[in-house]
Length: 115
Image (cartoon, rainbow, N blue to C red; front, side, top):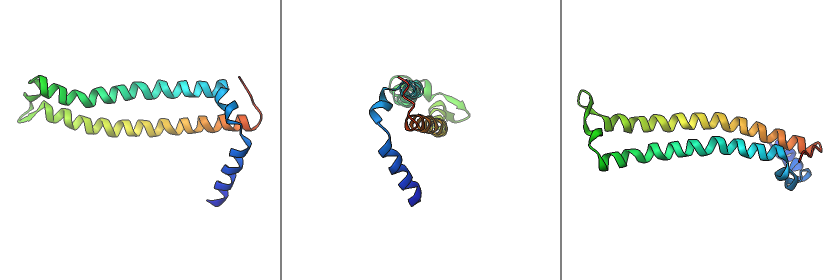
């Protein structure tokens, strides 16, 4: 653990982060992150706020779906499922982002300045 921390501190000293930010690989990395994060965030917010909006202004969700279970209960349960699924998807995608960021830092550490 201490060896890893020492290695990371040594790496941070050698990297010029201003060059990293200006590199084309970092700009592509940030575009990739935005292409992933923004649509999923919009989806989450719409899906999350749709329940209170629909229950406030419509009566559709109050109709029975399966026996005595109404659509509002299914929608509310779907929100829990959606939250867990989004968390799993994000964790997997974040791992790939971490690998991509490490590759960029390694490239910069080796002197690869691709503007």
